Image (cartoon, rainbow, N blue to C red):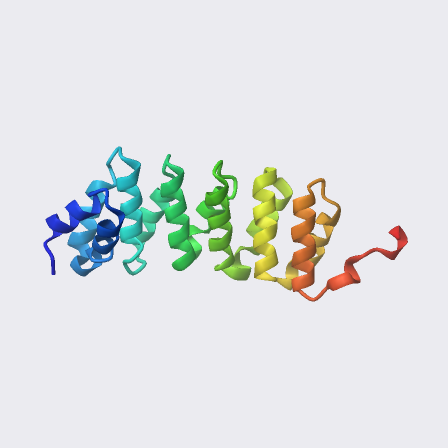
Length: 195
């Protein structure tokens, strides 16, 4: 095993290939590797914080790792938030659901999209949260919430989703139709009285 100080220097080398090789080796050091990464989490350089998130995402999900990834979701740099949302996509955690729901409103569209994908991995357990966003969130969050519901395919949400077929947003309408189609409702949702 390479010394932690060497891995640390590789991680902040500015060379993505070297940093990637180093990032996956920190977990071999367990708690010591995690503590070394946490020091770097305080860096003012966003790229350093991004590599911390990338590195800790290779660890087994624990309460400590969860807390670090949640911190990453709140970072002021969108690339760090993206990395944290991506980590939750690969390591689903119901404990992260409230923070991921918040990120649906992120000013960065990719962060919002990755949060939506991560919520999809949590399945039916977040359906009600997504419905709340649909009814009360800002437009970008509503679109991502409906997109997530279309992937989750929770039939308990059909009647609520039908309400959005005439939404002011064409994108919300589109994803509502997608959701209903994926749940096998198909053309049944059309109201013949409006034909």
